[in-house]
Image (tube, rainbow, N blue to C red; front, top):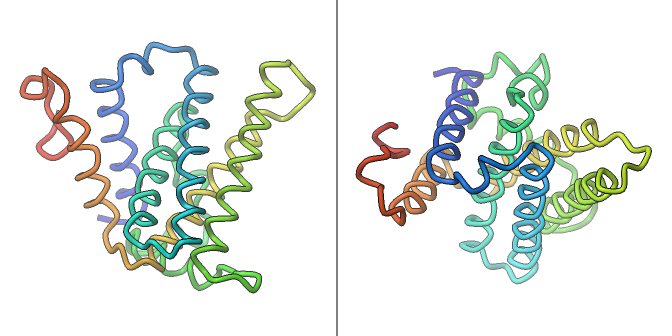
Length: 200
């Protein structure tokens, strides 16, 4: 499966998971849904930074996967393909997500910090921009809400893939699948709704 096909598959499966297992969020309007996702990213960006500073690799891996899930879900809210706004034209012929992540890691600059800390700080800063965007939307301020949110999501996605590569997570599809499957198993209608692993 090509890079673009893999990314689309991640989004498609995420969409089905969200629709079936998060109805309380699915029924919200677009502004409320993206605000909810920004809150999730704020939570996970804090976990990224803390686990990076504490050199807690396992927690850092978990926060990286959780953050990637939220970015994918957020992108779906905007009805955008990750391949259209988070992948440069020159990158679209890369063989798969791992090759893409490896390229992104090689291009990452760490500004004198340890790689994990540098990338966690960048995600934290970009999440702050997203918080500003949803706050400004509440106030109806003259602010480029959508552009800021999409640009930030694209940058966060690229940094998280680089971080996943640095952490040697491997194929990100597998931990994403395991994480969402574990969430689904808590639903009382799990056996009827279908699931991330075997299909919906």
